Amino acid sequence: MSKKLTVLVLVILLLPAAMVFSGGQQEGEAEGAAKLMVIITPDKDNTFFTAEADAAKAMAESLGYETLLAVHGDDPKQEGDLIDTAIARKASAIIIDIANADASPNNLKRADAAGIPVFCMDREINATGIAKAQLISNNFQGAKLGAEEFVKLMGEKGKYVELVGKESDTNAGVRSKGFHNIIDQYSTMKMAARETANWSQTEAYSDIESILQANPDVNGIICGNDTMALGAQAAIDAAGKGDIIVMGFDGNDNVLDSIMQGKIDGTVMQPNALNAEMAVQLADKYIKTGSTGMSEEKILNDCFLITPANADQWRGFKKIK
Amino acid sequence: MIRSNKSIARIMIILVIFAFFMGSCTIRKISDIDKNKKTDEYSTWTKSGKAFDPVEYVDSVWDAKLLPAFKESAVEITELLKALEEDKDAASQKYGKMKKTGGTWIAFKVKGEAFVLEYDDSSMNGKLLIDLMPADGTKDIVIQVGPVIKKTAIRDSVDFISFTDVGNQLQFASLADELNLRMKKEVIEPLDLEQIENKKISFYGAFKLEEDELLEDIVITPVEIKVVETADGSGG
Image (cartoon, rainbow over all chains, first blue to last red; front, side, top):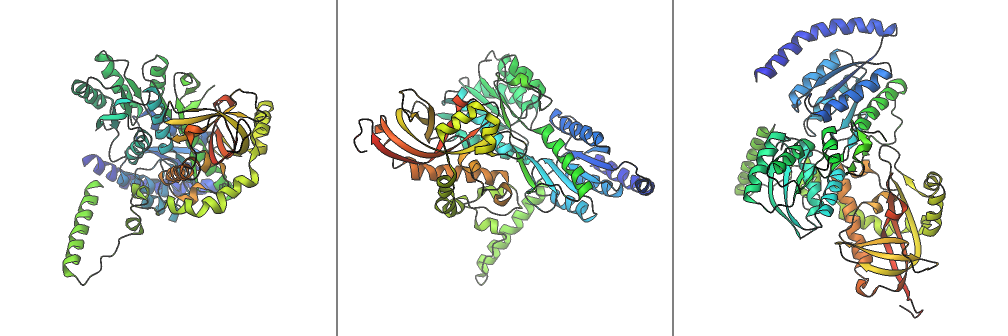
């Protein structure tokens, strides 16, 4: 609570200052000063989110924009404060990976009403007509892709464990649904355990440690994201059961390394950098022409399967070869 | 956020019980989503959003739009394979439906005639290994016949289906699943797969070529399979 209070107090204190600056900026704009893109992402600790923030920043700056980066911590209230800051700063566009598919639209509507176009990247909002474009990572399709490979590696049979992400994150549920959409078609695949490890590597480690003690004959572990997959892999290595199949999701560099080392068996690469860059490019087009030029608001970008065969072709969520 | 959802749910339950006991009130649905809950679990992925009924949608398009689209513009498979081998990009432009943004797959609608060399049911993703006309006894390509159907080739190969019109990514996926289910009912169920080896078939179908995929990896999802005759020329 005190952290949120601090942020709120800071924002309130900064607002007048921001208005002074933006006032100056308005005059500056008339003289051709750089326009501002505000880039809002979930957090600073997960490389998935820092990668998309960096990709958006780099693309914006290459197009001549100034940038302001901020994180909402998956809290719609904090996200709302950041939107208000962007409005006060008279941003030319907001590039955002939203906090929550239900709560965030209200925040975005405020920006839209203030005349600031909003461009969503990665996470989808279940509404159209608020953002000018949504560059969506197809989590459901990606989860099905990973599950198909997982089933294949397990020879379509055996006992498996599912590690689920943080419940409050919409994508945790989306990916789990995607996994089961595929796996449940195989009656010979039996789920030994399903637990949430809250996207945490250490939680995943201790979860798998205990699950293995109760279920020594587990053949595979499918994880809602890469950090949990790393924890699971470490746990099976420690237990001397490195041959258990482990499947991740995201495409983090350290999991690509693990795959290339023959440990984690696969992951699903999200088109992260692509979504971020496209969001900025469409924002730029909109700012300059009044339209994104796309026939649809929602652009669904598919995920890619990463296996030992192609793990070296990707880095920083981009295809390098 | 979660706490307020729970208290809203509690209040809702209390109101519903109250109305029920009052007797004179009709229970009004809070949103269309509740009404369609059975057929659209995916719109309840989030509380907002409109409902989408994949069964209703597929019923409305299967005969009226989907099959006609294949009959009208499917390309002969041997012609397509040859063109792809010669110049993948040109062939894709000419014959394929490309995804305009992001991902790098191309979807094709195809038709052809072939002998069925083998029905491979070693996996739940069962396959027919077929020898395209003119027959030379070697396997040319594969048609998947289930029970597990992979990928979303049918949905992605037709022009009239758009993601934005359908809804969110789960609803869009449910549409692909329903198309595959309908396909199994229309196309696979009437077939006697145990007896299909050595028979000649004519077919319409779709496949997607991912960026890194080779032509040998192609798997066709059928939308129509007709047994034409048996290998010895007698009527099927």
